[in-house]
Amino acid sequence: MKVQIFVSHPDVNNSVTQQFFKSTLALAEADVEITVLDEELHSSQQFNVADHQEKILAADHVILQFPLYWYLAPYSLKKWQDDVFTNRFINELKKVNQLKSKSLSLVINTGQPQKDFQPGKKSQFSLNEILRPYQVFANELGFDYLTPFIVYQFAYLNEQEQYHLLVDYLIHVELINPSFVDKGQYLLNKVKQTIELDAKIQLQAVVDTLEEQLTDYKDLREALDEVKDNEE
Image (cartoon, rainbow, N blue to C red; front, side, top):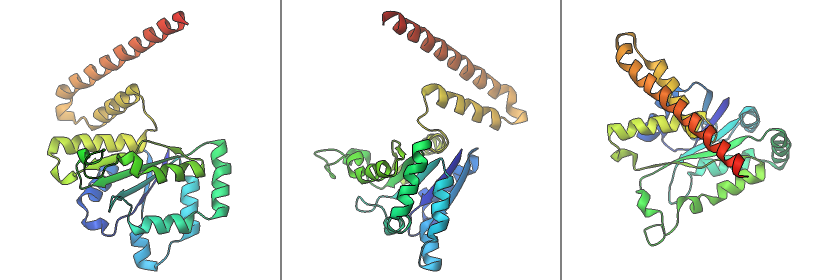
């Protein structure tokens, strides 16, 4: 699977969150390409529109990754949308997506806590409501719009929480609408790949347990599906 990530951030090299994402992607198995919009703007004052359009056409999963500034994306992302998505290119994308729909998702980090995004709290709105224009954007292009991946207050995450974030981010990048079994199999494969020779005995028990749990879950799902079919 080809994944194209467009990062919008005015100072990406000094962003702890963006550097965390970048280092995490070194563990990805999919063909992942990162394009930092602001770096291109700083160097040439404009986007290479044809190049960006080719990247989008070649991708199976397009990710827009940015921090939330006053409930909006940074300037570079809006300019990128305006410059790259010409009427001709939109029509071309629609034709391509009629054959095999691409996926579009958002990866967003915010300094506000999750509890702020609800009625009666600071923002008064959920993030899904605030991000609705991107869902409309995806629908207009014929993309499958995936559930946004949101990181709240990265600076306050402890080591264990950062580890869980690492895994969740990889799953979001590499799997499209994964089931419970898909996630379990993905984690199992990652564990197998990272087993070191001197720790193989200890970690093999973890692998065996995960395999047993996945098998039990699959058997349970098959049994439930059979019961459902009989009821119908």
